[in-house]
Image (cartoon, rainbow, N blue to C red; front, side):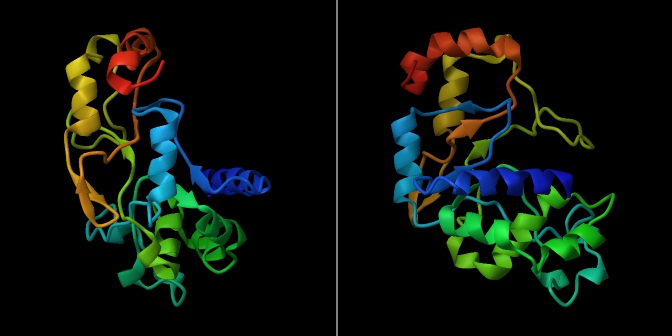
Length: 210
């Protein structure tokens, strides 16, 4: 639970500032895909928070469930998702003050079960399913990873082109407030330090800032 403990502390500290309304967890290898104002409006105008939460019947989904989770968490309620999320203030408070699900995950989500892929996703799906968009706003590429890899592709200097960045920004469709949109991802990962220079060169023309 060490990762989830750290995330809860980050949320608790951020909640101390009453002007903070949305809370986004990204990694050190993430980059923004849009300027600050566009990203801010995206969260501000959204009717839901962006937490991916899926019912995975496989080994890495339901296969990690422990019967000790009952009755607080039944197998049918067990969820999996990516660690990178965005929640509004109300959901952030719910995560920080939780005393119902946290003890169960701490005791029964042991090696082989990764709490940061299950805890928030399961808890929020049980408590506030209508508040979740059930998708992430952080783009990753698993196509170049091996079949048993636990990590997505890493992009370096040679990968950064205008075509690549436009594909990441606009290459798919999703639902936003029940409407189709191509603005699905606000961040992307994983980017190596060598990608910094070409990213800075392309940011003004492709990403709209810099």
